[in-house]
Length: 290
Ligand SMILES: Nc1nc2c(ncn2[C@@H]2O[C@H](COP(=O)(O)OP(=O)(O)OP(=O)(O)O)[C@@H](O)[C@H]2O)c(=O)[nH]1
Image (cartoon, rainbow, N blue to C red; front, side, top):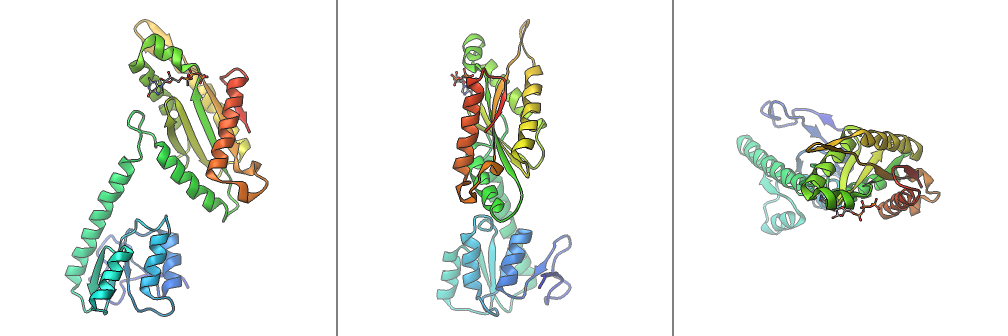
């Protein structure tokens, strides 16, 4: 059964204008709707046909994709032990029926505000300060998530590791601040040449990693070659001098793994890293697909 958008049984005052309200009849439908729509907030009853609200809340909180979504229990159950259990499971609020619509809306607004702060902090903690790209922690999380999605679908996934060639001499000759400008310039080019759905990260130092969603290893090698060629044309001015840099790129695709079980984030990272090492060995400024 498909959850419907509606004004629910709370009359015309609900939902407030501009909010989309999805209504599910039971836990199975609720879990599916939550996975499909990733709502900003969940209002959850305790007594439902089949699985009860407490069990469903535990399922939300055990799923890495759903755990950040605030859950407000909306129930007729008044006893303190149940309330404590709900909060211990991760609920953000507990409202008992009959409730006042104005108060409920205020509690929903407060929960959404808290979620926005949480999202903002989470995002900030995952951004590399020098380049504005995602950092390594975010890459690892996204890679794990993408691979788990991949194992449930037919979509492709590739990873490219990009490393600036002979960067140490650039730093040693022209200084660290100039080296930083080059890292920023290369980061900007990688970002420009990626699709919105790609995840471009600074992996560390002068190394970058790009998750290419829905892309075969062949497609990824074409994109990587485009990036390599573009970066080669960049020129960084320092006084009267113009400095150019090149990058080596290692590409690994999920399609190269015969056994799906062997495809993990670490395995894809290792395969891309091995290809990068090979690109360096072959003379740098090239793309190698593993
Ligand atoms: N300016 C600057 N330099 C950095 C940063 N992080 C790492 N580096 C420098 O990047 C250089 C990396 O050098 P190596 O790992 O020896 O590699 P490379 O000289 O690029 O040589 P190949 O990778 O073999 O082509 C080191 O000198 C690091 O100090 C940073 O944030 N800013």
